[in-house]
Structure formats: C-alpha cells, structure tokens
Length: 373
Ligand code: GLU
Image 1: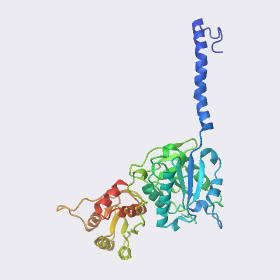
Image 2: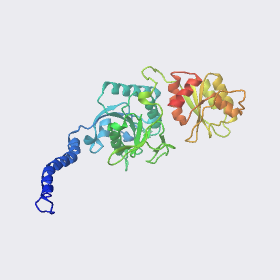
Image 3: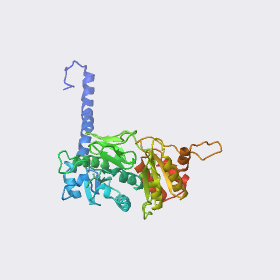
Image 4: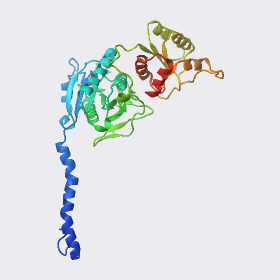
C-alpha cells in the first residue's frame, strides 16, 4: 500500500526504496510486538515455596486452613507462580515461641541452600506480632532471594477476607527477580514494606502495616511490581548471625517508661534471669527516677540495656564515652551507659539484642551491631 505506484506521487527511486525497506520493517515490527507475547506464553512461572505458620489468614473457626486450602483460594495462581507448600505450624502469632523462630530460620536457610532454582519463599503469619518474626528472618536468613511475610486481618469465613488477595501479591513479589537483595519483605494490600521498618499501626483496620517515617519499599501494582528504594542496613545475605550455631536465644525483656514508673519491673526482670533489657523510653529515651536507679542496677549485674523510644519513630543517638568535660544530667548518664537502639522500635531492638547477645556482651560491640543492622 505504501509503495503503490503514484499513491502519494512519490518519485520512482523512493518507490524502489519502500519496496526494499517494507519487508525489513514488517519483520522488525513483528519481532518487536511478538517477542513479549511469545515470552509470556512460553516462560515458566517462577517456583515459590509457601511455608505456613498460621494466623488469621488460615483461621477458619473450628478447622484451620491447610497450606493447600490456602493456595486454592488464590485465583489465576498457575499463571503467577508454581507453588509448593509446607506447613510449619498453624497457630496464632502470639503463640509462636523462640525455639520456633530458630527452627523456622534454619528451615528457610536449608530450603534456599538445597533448592538453587527456587525464586523465593512466602511465609504466612498471624498479624499481631508478625513484625517480630519478619525482622528475625531479615537478620538470619542468609540468602539474597526474597522471603515475603504475609497474613490477613479478616478470617476466611468473614466478608471481605483479605487473605487471598494478600497471598496473591506475596507470590508475585516472591517470584519477582527485582525483590532480591532487599531483605525480608512484608506484603499487605499491595504495599511492600521492609521487615526492619514495618509495624502494625492499627488494631483492626485492613491498612495496618506501615513503615512510619520511611514508607514503603515498593508496590505490587496491577500491571507490575515496582520498587522505589532498598534498605541500607545489613540484613539476610549480609548478616553475621548464624542460626545454625545458636541453640537458644537469650532472654530479653522490654520495659516501658511512663510517669511515676517504679524500677520494680526492671529489677524483677534482672533478678528472674534476663540477659538483656530494652527500655521503651519517653521521647529520646527518658526514664523515671525509679527506673534510672533500676537501670544502673541492671548494668551492675552485667545485663545489657538498650535504650529506645516509645514514640513510634525517631532515633536515639549513641553517646560517646564519658570525659572530664562531660556534664551529664543523671538521665543522660544512664543513657550513656546503655546501648543506643538507634531508630529501631522497642520490639525490633529486642530481636536484634537477642541475636547480638549470642555473639557478644560487650557494650561497644553491641552498639556496633545496632548501628549496622
Ligand atoms: N491475629 C492473630 C495473630 O496475630 C491470629 C489469631 C489466630 O490465628 O488464632 O496471630
């Protein structure tokens, strides 16, 4: 058509050129438009392993959902991923024990080690304490391939069950090559959050997982997975923690500060065998006078104390060593002797302190870990 004689009144030499170029152009267009179609039609979907621990996502009253029943709820799954399933537990997240953290982390490490072609792993969890388990995996799974933690706010028998949609997004994220090297991810309502930053912000709303002060890493959008940033602190493939060598996690308790708080809870934790304490201080780590004395008691007993903030965001800076010029208030002196929890929320600081204590009980070494993870 373009080359039809006299069509646009082109001179003869242009008509010859069109005749030569037309087949080349048509072939190029064909390659351009058909290649993605052919790739989509022939590419194998990524292999993703689902390891379930329980939670609301499988909490059908009277009869909790098995991993295969969960997977069956996700529409079009065959096109997204080739899914293998495994049940680790089927309990509420508040019932998960520390030896289960260790066993789950060891299991994920073993799965990645033994299956080089697996794209990623999806882990289901109850939502209440999901962020603690997710951060533990972020610090202990030594692989660049993604672990995606997911759950649901509504039960399977409830109108508006969000489990199937969240699971679908989690499989997409776990199968996506761009998810590698970003640590453990938490996926809810299409938001991709880092396990380090994410927290449950609302007791009942569907949109509850957020990363205050930092925001999402990316989004599982309708058309594609998009990332906007990656975590800068050490995690997963870059971790120094080796769950293969840890037989028991040290006991670390979290104590909150509030007006008029006595030091009794801190002293009780120390006397009952705590190896470490995380103080959820007011503002930039302030504690009551009674707690200040109790923190000194804890430090004298050789218990590591990490100062964090109960505000929900912000950083506690480490204090340098005391000098002749230092003119600390008693509160600042207490903070100086403790380890700064940096910007970690109290429950996240507890997870890191437990792991740190498996390596060292030296103040400076633990402080280094808090500045790196
Ligand atoms: N929301 C609960 C949790 O965080 C789940 C309750 C249950 O699974 O029984 O685990």
